[in-house]
Amino acid sequence: MPNNTGKTYAYRSAQLTTSAALVDASSVGYSVVSADNALNSSTPAGSTVTVDNVQPVTPSSGAISTTNAGGAPGAGKAGTGDTISFKFTELNIDPFLLLAGWDGTASTSVTVRLTNKGGASQNDGLTVLGTNLGSVDMGDSGYVTADADFTTSSMTVSTAAGVATVTITLGTTTGSSSLGQVTGTPTATWTPSSSATDKAGNTVATTSRTMSTPMF
Ligand SMILES: [Ca+2]
Ligand SMILES: [Ca+2]
Image (cartoon, rainbow, N blue to C red):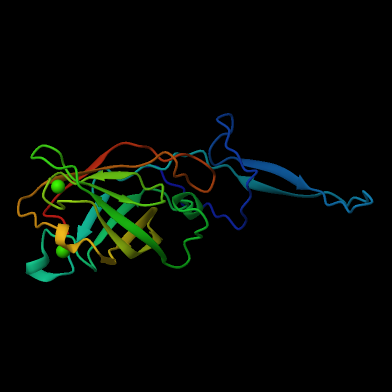
């Protein structure tokens, strides 16, 4: 699977755009000229950048995973300390485009919403509000009987071996009376968002990924 191992970014600019005409991993020269208000210009300073035209994808296995922090009584039921993780086969995923204003160097506070869709055939949903992480179909209608928000949840991103892992740890909820316990083995489906990109602006592939386990 392609990844962008070996490409590093020390600067960020709103002016960066990708072009299909550029060949991935090729070297492209550029120069910088500075000018003062009187239009006195510096001598051009040149260097090169390495093109990154590889679309971030998600692993075909293990792209979405969960953990249960509550021991056996909490298994299958969302609770404080439970986690959900999303993986991208991309070292240079852009935290700013996962959550506006987040550089990914420290954990940040987010709200996880479990959306109640009711009925035997309508699976509950999971979203991380304000992010471009896409959405999860939980694969079962029994997680919540009404929408429940886990505020003060925390989100981190780490990178290793060509994979970026975004992990969200559930915070506290005021909707605990709405939480249900799922005892089967539902299949959850994550649909990533193309609003997430790598640092070169390549949009994330939106191929859906599944996990089969008693979640949370
Ligand atoms: Ca749990
Ligand atoms: Ca439900």
